[in-house]
Image 1 (cartoon, rainbow, N blue to C red):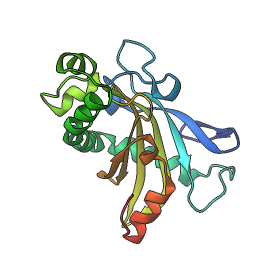
Image 2 (cartoon, rainbow, N blue to C red):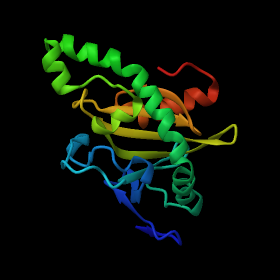
Image 3 (cartoon, helix red, strand yellow):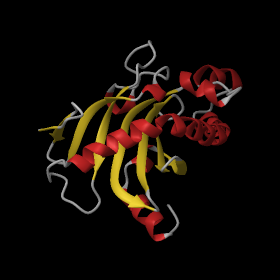
Length: 196
């Protein structure tokens, strides 16, 4: 366990990843998705409470948390309100395709599909369909910006969830939950390679 002047307490989870509790106010009002594997845990909207996960690319996972690691949380919290609309637009842009695929995969008619995953009149309507589960903070800086992965639970993909990878406040990858925490995507972006 490590304590910092920020008041955050980092705990090593299963000797693999450092975690701490934070409040991400930009994500308050979305679904509360703190159940197993990002399942909705209550009907009331989230207050923004989530876990931050420290993802190290060039250091051992159990290497103690340093002040610069803890500062990654501060950087995320300072820019979260800029990230939210970028995430909403990216997800809303993909939502019709995901919705169609779900209907086809599950053999749903339009009425069943609308009940399970309604159409989106606007990106803000995503608040009723998804919620932030975890923030993955990478210790990599490229062009003066850090990488942040946002892992969501969502109504249209309850098995694999939703992952968004950002470089600064720009969405660079979008897909299943693993998109938010796979180090290989960050490494590829740094090298200018395609993100699979």
